[in-house]
Image 1 (cartoon, one colour):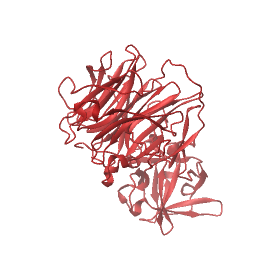
Image 2 (tube, one colour):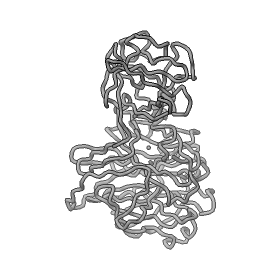
Image 3 (tube, one colour):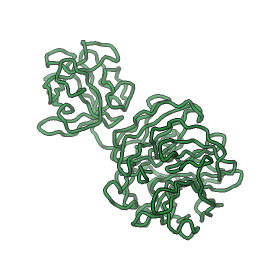
Image 4 (cartoon, rainbow, N blue to C red):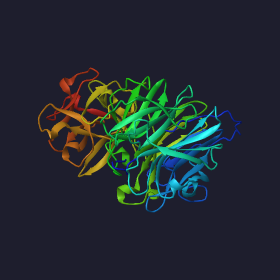
Length: 479
């Protein structure tokens, strides 16, 4: 998690398990959650479930997370339940300071719960510290016969090699095997461990794919046979660039880490990624914390950022920003709302749309023209930059249209890059009588242009002296 000896900001990941219980067919109406707020429960109190994980039992989603004292030491692992992922009823403080002497003074972070079908037991894993510093760096386990009952503390321990264990999550694969993913080697590495059959201990390490990359806040989920690992960097409470990797086996090979979302995770850090399975779709919900530590507040003042994840291809993901997220747990639809309007821009000479190459969220990714398909990498929104200029943000990443290296030269590449305040990311739209626009860079006075007036997919966008050519005219379309 952020705080420890290292950082924070679009999921310690909880496995979603539909247990073979009788469902009381409670239908949940679609709801909308507002991002960057602290949720409240049915009694009007703050929902204190930070670093959260979710497990589904029957018709209910159970949200487990950190509930802390004002000095950020452990108070409880609190559990809330909901059918719609907005209306949260506080059910219990399932683990408290009185649960075991080890918990009288402690930090307990990122609790995650799985159900073990063989033992008929709910098993919670978490990160445990002594409440004074982050030197213990231990995993811990507690168990219960019921999902929302009191959990019995078993013990805290380190992985078999004796390495540290800090930010962690759980994942249960299709065959029922359970895994812990944890930040190790003082957060330099991420290890994937298979758990014992009863889920209460380590069996063996499966992989260490990102040695020395300093990643934390892991969230592991599986979609269409592909494993996705979403993580943040290590920067204390401050948010940073989240990244993801994919594999078709937990043992690897894993892809390189790629950027997801903007350079500060929209002010949040991964807690979990929740599959929302409904009657017509399965959507994936990013659940993040906007940690109050970033503004020197206590953890319980932290806010929530829940966003829809999009998948341009089987092995890629987009983490777009929306002020609100609409959730329909009946159908499984999770969609962003607000933050627009969003536009597409089609070059007049080719009819092709301005896009970010390969759906990349990486800094410096090429801006190109592609056949218009309505993808998030072809949707753009504006932020006012003053004096008639705007910043132009790619919806799939939250990053800005940028002239590389602040160049004033003809032919300088146009890329997408983390947003700043400089003039090479500020643009003026000059409208013509035929409802097309020239897009003029503030720092250079040059126009956005399709290189060589190419009509080919993938042709680069550059800046050039403004002229009358159709390769500098763009039709703005509502996305």
